[in-house]
Length: 235
Image (cartoon, rainbow, N blue to C red; front, side, top):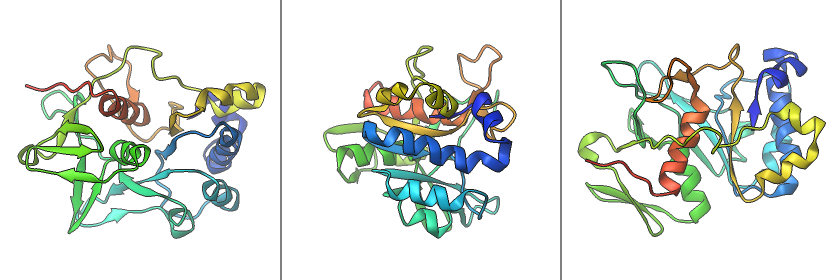
């Protein structure tokens, strides 16, 4: 569920992003998505908060995002009026390769101080399975799915990037023109956030980028697909 260029323009840019997200969530709610992951850091009050708070309150299996502060000791959290509606708060830290800045893998956990958070992709998967995350030194298990992700290597997994168009992107502005598009979200795990190039905070290079940078929200959706399809790349 994308705040793309058309959506960004329709809702007056940065000032209207929260209203755009709220409208998008309201439009897809009748389709009953399995979970909604909001890949935006909502750590301070802003325009459209009343509308967004109401939209979050009606969203099933809502996952909100947090990000580690530069000091590595605390988290930049969603404000309480949003957090109270969240079934989980997950981290959005990316970990590009130090040699070429390409994002091949993703840490499933990060710790700030003594406060550990799972990544938003893993939290979404846990919620759809209605299961706890069971840990061993060598892997994580959610329901009947074993995720090879050992403690010694920081609980990372390699992201199995999907071919083009496997992960569908529908702009919020597109829903205004054709509300029938909302049916595509039925039973799906929805990643909602910014893809507009002029507004996206995080962009990553992937092994398949060929010069085109991927929005962080799309990388996190690919991480979810890697786990959900159990298409793990291991040594």
